Image (cartoon, rainbow, N blue to C red; front, side):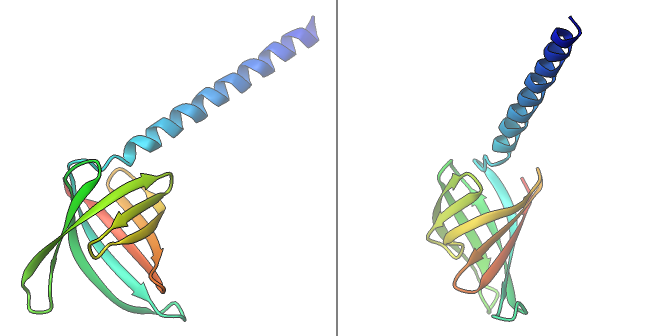
Length: 132
């Protein structure tokens, strides 16, 4: 009888742990919904020795579930915008077109901030802070 009680307890704990893991995964996926959000983005790029070479800032407007717009200023201070398409595949955001074009791996993720990494061919880090 003692063994049966121990087995039932162990099974209950395992089921509870699985339920917690699955519910956490669903919450994480919700964070990746960019539809109708606006983010300030800072892109930093590095040389072969991992020294900072430069950085730029822009605003990323995710207008739909697959399209967005990047707004940036050129060296003369004039504002420009470029359209992009995107899709999310697990921990990768695939951007097509725009200055952000390419595959970006999600390194860190919270409700208000994302840190992404890409190689173009050198390493780039993009920190995105949610505005809206």
